[in-house]
Length: 159
Image (cartoon, rainbow, N blue to C red; front, top):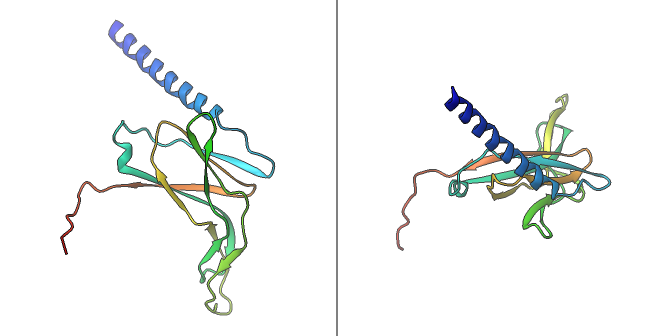
């Protein structure tokens, strides 16, 4: 029984230390400014060296009614900003620009469809040790996708 107690105590200590480190790192990021919302992404933990096999794609946008036929994009950019004194980076969309759309003719009576319309996405290196913090205009959302490199590599040929 003492071995199990030691194991549980050690596990609890490790989890508490990880939670404290995440909380401490998150405190480095300022709250959202007026008209902005702060979103936080805590990526699944990877061992050192594993991070380089992954990337994160960040999408910032909002749900909008579209015609369901044309491709729709939201104006704006996701900018990387340094967090002074910490060595961390945060991401920000200052404002949403105008909506742009292709101009395909829509058949009469086509119902509108709700879609997540985004500014151009941003792909960044994976780092599971610090939170990803994204500031967006109120009413916006943040979504993300994790990309994983294949184990297989291909050889280029001279020529």
